[in-house]
Length: 406
Image (cartoon, rainbow, N blue to C red; front, top):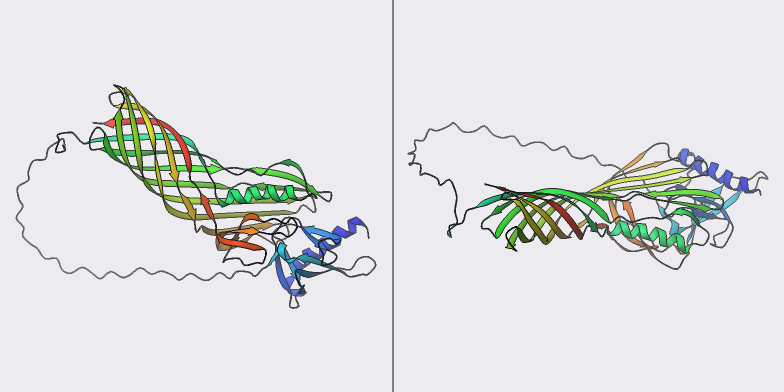
């Protein structure tokens, strides 16, 4: 059998299965490929001849399962011989399409008309004069300050970074994949800016209410070769957070123009996580893309130190170092799939991010992964399955100005 025919006929057959599934099903099992460049073997043995490799996300059809292997029937070759292929169960999952349920229509409650108004005569007490400058019992004035800042920081990343790093580890453990360029890079650096209004009850103590915006992302591309076929894989995760914070401030003068500031508090963080994965192959211009956006809100804690340098009696230059503890979990959103072997874009609603450790069976190791499923996945090759989380714990450096209001 010629090498060109070996790869061409299975591709035609697999495409036929995808385009006309209703004509090919006879108690068939739909399978979704989990591992990039999954191999279809001639025998149910990982050491047997490889007929073809298929990408992650591809849907296959099987008529039966033999122990740890699923049987795939391929089209006859030019001599009329029917080829039977096999794929290992650790590299696929049984796939069923999710039915979208109609959401119940929420109706606004009908508010009854108000009762007839009744006039009540009230005696208005005399208005007491209000002091223009509120003071504490010790005689100090209450003041107001506005802080504006921007900066950069380092954050852990959590399960998404673990998944990206495991891709590097897994490919380096496979001696038949040749990485010709690039490296999968986790995201750690983020940019932020925000503002805070501080109520100073004394020259040393105040309470601040703030709002801000933080964003971190990292795009990385890897080019590789397998069996004279070129592949390009691209990851581009992105997170954005809007923190609503409440902090206690304590100031300690260090001289006429310098002041040391200590602050700590808690915040409510509104988080959005974007996942974007692209795969392209030189075989028939194959293309696959996953786009997912999940949202989650969580409480976190922050604190730090700062130095204020007074420029004028009402303006000061500020340098601060912050620490933050925050984890976003129970992330849920819609998953959009776009592939060259699909008839169009497929959208799965209300899909959660899950963490699991995958044992592919060909390296003797397990690798941390994240996947997007409507419910908890349960495969024999998965272990330590739980809801995925993004760890935004980290540190940051900020610079800004403080404006003292009279």
